[in-house]
Length: 538
Image (cartoon, rainbow, N blue to C red; front, side):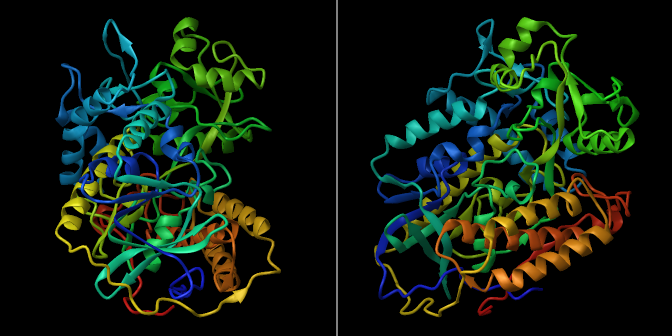
């Protein structure tokens, strides 16, 4: 294993400000804010986000939140759909726990003011790939994440014991022999601050920005995963990056997501010759799970030599499509496309990171006093492929669980903070010659080509050698802003994605090895785990 440094930046505890809270929450997306709501009001809580709250992946979630809430549906069906999509690698107890809480969490959002779409006075539910029933609750057509985040943010604002630091970059977690003690946080114009906490909850989201094609916002650079590893937490399932099948593919446009609900409403996938091709790959057609559809699209693009395929909704009722997908309609209109008459160019893109920090059902990591929730984690819910619209549900459930557990433990601890005498004062080599943007773009391109939808030993070995080379001269550098720190975190996470993808010599879910095309349960129905040795200096 490459020898990773313990901290990104040098700091002297005697020369920087100190801030003390009971519970520190790193990340202001759905999981982070839901955790904050759960903390006992007698405790002081601080939520830290490296950008505005509106920049979390939760806000960008289009499709909806899944739950068996209709009379013709049941928990067992939702559980079974999740297990099937997860390709025999889910933790069945975790799946059962999360799915059974879905109606309660949806009701919770409604009580807080969420305005979900309705039909005939009842909640409207859609159907997406891999689901056997209509169970996707949505808001404003295709803006569910934004509505949920609006409600949860408003609810959090009412809590006087919860503070928020925006535009603050969490460099690293502070640890001693007893576990996590808080974090080193860089604040604009204020330098580094040591935030000490009785309990810390990590909710920093995923790592889609490692790939050239992604639905993720700019902030999704794997910071929490990398920081947790440096602090000694176990990482798991790092090979499983989910690629969404349908990203809008137009020159000049951000790679915007075209929600799975479009196919749930009946849209067809056709190639450049107008052929509806999904029947050649799976009998479930466009409603196959995401790993199957992404794989099929890649193969069809190779077959036709065309850079994309197309979504066709021209056979569907125009008024229904316009009302159901207003956001997508506006985006496409900017580029001269009418979603009800024109073919929409799409191709896969990195969407959801299934791997991450290992947690149990309460969100407990392998480091004492450190919890985690949401996309930063490997909870066992998704297995080797996430079922559509289970992510917002996971954020709600695990945010609540981690918040409650951290709150209980913080309440048992005396209001006395132990500050280690010396944390990290060494000086690193000052970075002044690196073109950070060039390395970042090169990394994103490399990961897309060699560790993307289709993988092979030859390509992964090439990626491994290149990333290790970059790590040697980038991770030893001393950066002074988020651009450099993000690159260091991206390289750290990329290293483990590639390492795990090389190790898993089979195809399972989103991990597609073209040199090992079959699933091998006898050898690979297990998790790959990575953890630095406690006390390891580098």
